[in-house]
Amino acid sequence: MKLLTCISLLFISLIPALGQQDTGIIRPGANFTNSFNYNLFYMPRSKIVEYKNLETKAEYDSIRIVLYQEKLKNYEERIFLADSATQLRKLEADFWNSKLLANDALLEEERKTNVHLRADIQRIRQSRIYYFLGGIVATSVVVGVLKD
Image (cartoon, rainbow, N blue to C red; front, top):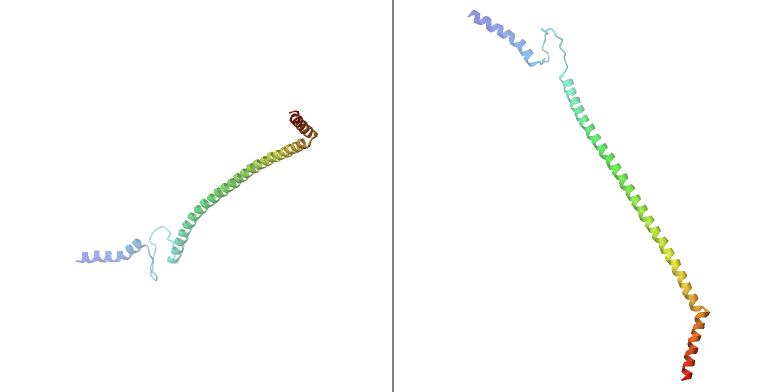
């Protein structure tokens, strides 16, 4: 019986020491003795929570940075495409402007030619040869009528 009592007292005395090792938590107002050879560091729970929150925020911020970099890359592509589209529109406008100017030049030449041709027709109508030929034809008609 004595042996059983000694063993149970030994186990009862070891329970707090085992409890401290297993949980790793120092309760407020409790005493702690370092029975090991290495250094132990203590930090309040509020600091641990703060550091965990900072770690989470850092991870979140790193993800945001990656997303912002992708967004920036997309904006650069959009700017490049918009500049290319603007340049293509300008080239197309210049092409059609040159076509219109060429057509205007051709139409102007045609108008000049038409004016010259109308002037020639007017001149021919008013020329003396026209009247002379008209007189010959009229005279021959009169002579032909009188001979009969």
